[in-house]
Image 1 (tube, rainbow, N blue to C red):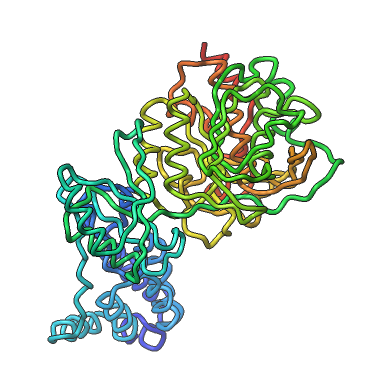
Image 2 (image 1 turned 45 degrees about the vertical axis):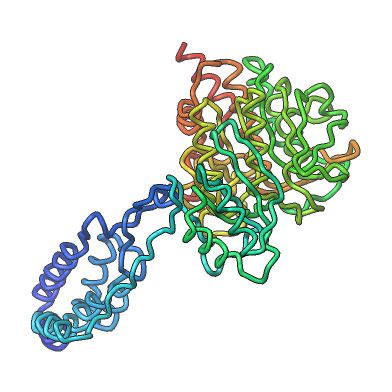
Length: 508
């Protein structure tokens, strides 16, 4: 850089002045119009006109990157500065950065000249509009690389008056109707179809969209339980009791008669620790199978009252079996989870524990939003896919309290997902929990952490029944105990059962 670079600027004060000028210039250039900003969770809405994404290949970096990069360019080396500033730039910005670092203001003029030549900068890829039926909904196509859905299955809502046309289309596409379900919570009637022909799921969804017979259609997504394999044990200390101050908290509230739905794998309802706590059971899967370790552990974390002490031992559990399989391979589908959530709402559930994670799912998101509007507190595990994982759902929906896992020393579970979807943390590493056949297990994962927070929410609602879901979330976050580390890792901190109940007492 002959104006700001190492050879041309020999006086250190002028060199730093040049860095400041370049930093200011890049800071002004970083102010993108609102339409180019990332739309975040709002893009998950089924609104037909989401905000346009940025044409930059990466998210726009914060002001600090421009300042650091510009100083590096001017005061250290053009190569260093270009590398820093090039973290998240469009092609035009990269031209300006590189030529500006090496040539100074003359480089910016040269960049403008180069970019004005025909074909110098490729146009951004066209945005494919969402396919729509003749109703109000959308055709939801899975991303090309996504595999988290049932192969050869789709869910749809028929447009009014389009049943005959759908039947004709189904014959042409070689589709078989598997089941139809009315959902009171959303007022929708959804159908599950199987693709028997050789056409791919994506191509079938596109054909349905072009035919205009569906108000909404999407894959039948798959969800996985958010827990690591458990180890059977008859020994161990239940550190959760002291960590959450349960003995003291139970002098204020035990969660008496609050209905908590657990959408999970099959629970051992005959476990001695869970005697008398179940207000209802709903087996969505419908196949024969033994009780599962995951669902049993979640039920015990909330309501155990025998050898182990659950967070809210006097709640009334609604056991929803929506996941089938063995060990960590148990999976649930969109359709089964929708059935379970709708049933839980019909039975008056105040809290729903969802210790599973998966892809964004428009139909599930709509039902979750309706459930929260009805006054149901929704709690979910953020997932164990690791620090580099994108947000997983339903924990990342704004209506849901996303929970991560910490150990007895408040250290984060290494496999836990990170990000702004984490509202708070709870014990979830080497937790002593109930297991099928009256046994016990040591288990780790964000799943059991989610169950602990569901239990604390039950303590709150038993003590203050008029609390809304938003108020429950706000109080949990406000009273969480801060721990070391970045907020994006553990949210507001570790949940405190005694602290949140004490705050509720003072508020009265």
